[in-house]
Length: 140
Image 1 (tube, rainbow, N blue to C red):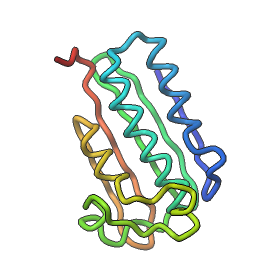
Image 2: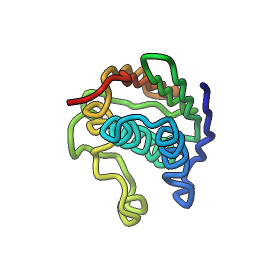
Image 3: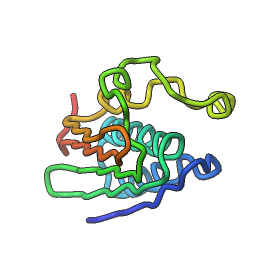
Image 4: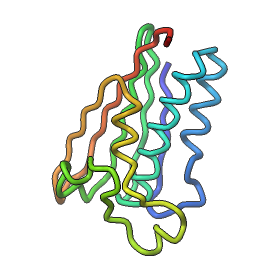
């Protein structure tokens, strides 16, 4: 199964629309609630990062027999220092984003904690491509 969402830049009025829609789909598939929560957290954090820090992008969700793969591809400007961006609390959010309640510097760390597999390809001046993998297995 394939699901794709367009994520605009700087439009927080649609923040959470893609992750909420995907969550509904996962519930319809009767996946374990803990797995749904991990996937939804990761997709929401990625969605917010695209809105806050890029020029827009897309989220592509592929449901396989044993795994769910979520790709998040934005249109730039890339992450100048990925090591710093992976540290809890480090943020480049503007004052306006912070006033909206976003930009606490937990996006990428929360994504990492939520995934079974994570790949981030980025560099300053180019787009960012995040690939998240989730195993479809019963959790303890």
